[in-house]
Amino acid sequence: MVMARFDVTVAGEVNLDLILYGLQESIPVDREILASDFQMTLGSSAAIFAHNLSALGRSVGFVTRVGSDPMGSLAMERLAEAGVDLSHCTIAGAGKTGVSILLPHGRSRRILTYAGIMFDMTVDDLDIDYLASAPHFHLSSLFLLRGLHAGLPDLFRELKQRGMTLSLDTNDDPEDRWDGVLQELLPYVDLLLPNENEIRRIAHRDSVEEALDVVSDTVPLIAVKCGRSGALIRQRRRRFMAPGLTVEPVDTIGAGDSFNAGFLSAWLGGASAEECARAGNITGALSTQRSGGTEAFRDRALLTGFLRQHPLPERHR
Ligand SMILES: Nc1ncnc2c1ncn2[C@@H]1O[C@H](COP(=O)(O)OP(=O)(O)O)[C@@H](O)[C@H]1O
Ligand SMILES: [Mg+2]
Image (cartoon, rainbow, N blue to C red; front, side, top):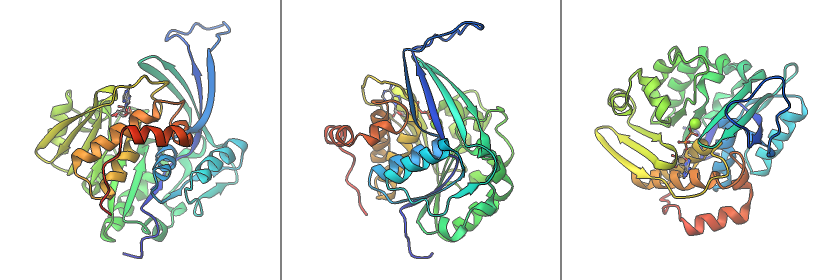
């Protein structure tokens, strides 16, 4: 392996989240409907993860394809402010940066996404030596990165051959098929980070436990995010529940990506699965304390205060 330049490299999509608060689940047509509040924040699973991992003090190299439009520029600015390395991102000549409109309705939420150029990134946009300049590689939102699918099994194989560990958060499959390249990738994955719905769909099983029985034969460590209840961890035959923190959320957008950042940061430091899960629950809960997935991590006073109240496990670098 070449000398590690980063702690983690990430490839994925980038977009802005436009969040409208206070809307009822049933929204009538042909009426003007007023939201009670609005926020525009850095969105997309990969970008939120990279941003927050960097805010937690890890060095992160992020690769994406971004549109040459104000939405793309703002998203990249936010990532740069958090200290994420963007030196290998490519700017698309044509096509728009994607956008998500989010409607939190209390416990449930709507996510309406225009993918824009998210679908366009291919492995030709990725510099493999750059991705390999860290001991760990993370991929988010598999089903939005359609252009990558053809090249991903070879990419994962190559990164594993170079001695790296890999983590995957598929997020939702908008087509709800959960097949294709996913099953080819799982054998290379060291750490899988689904939520409860996603693990059931990945395994094509009705219950989370059944799904974990299936997937844990292939993936050595799985952290299933269970919202306010915390996370269910499966490490081969071992399973345990790591309870979530009790907090009053502003919204839970990006909580999963923030959980991933805390979990992975601890994991890279050599922490136990219990400590990693605890770290994930802390950073997941932290993200709910402000709008969207990254605002809580941009607020340095909140970040420091929250982590003083809920300390992350000692790292063993
Ligand atoms: N209401 C909440 N209270 C406390 N922690 C939460 C809450 N919602 C989410 N979290 C934390 O964030 C993690 C990820 O949230 P979750 O909504 O399960 O993921 P995803 O966004 O991927 O669906 C949870 O495992 C938990 O640690
Ligand atoms: Mg998620």
